[in-house]
Each structure stands twice: as C-alpha cells, then as structure tokens.
Length: 98
Image: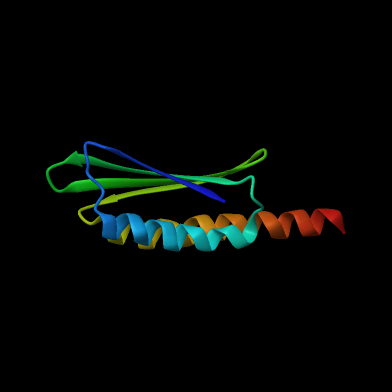
C-alpha cells in the first residue's frame, strides 16, 4: 500500500507524519500493493484543523474526514471509521459470493 501525505496551510511535523504512516500502514492487511491511501491535513482557521483519509483500491473508495483542534485526535477518530467501512464491504462481498 502506498501512502501519500499532503498538507494545505499546515506544516506536518515529523512525529505526526511517522504516526500517520504507522497507523495507516496497518490498513495494508486488507489490500494488495495496488492500494493508495491519501491523507490530507489542512488548517481551516486558527484553532481548527481538518484531516481527510481516502483509500483507493481498483474501483473501491473508502473515505473519512474529521475536524477539531487536534490533528492527533482526528487521526484516532478517522482510522476506525475507514476500517469499519472496509470490513463491512468485505462481509458484503463474502455474502454475495455464497
């Protein structure tokens, strides 16, 4: 899985970048090498930051976003959302094949 991290009006610190790579990298167990995870971090106002996570694999798209005053908190909230989407889709495909 390839991970792309972008920022708009925000500078990503090395600690946050490493944490994003580590946590988003755990989603690779659901995909092959063709998947791409895009993370966008942006500053909306003085104390409001928004993070978006999109995972693309072939024709599948899983996406979540969240805004708050803390980027680390945003990451901790959007990752479980995307993981639930992935698991739900996998269960649907298994039921469809049986």
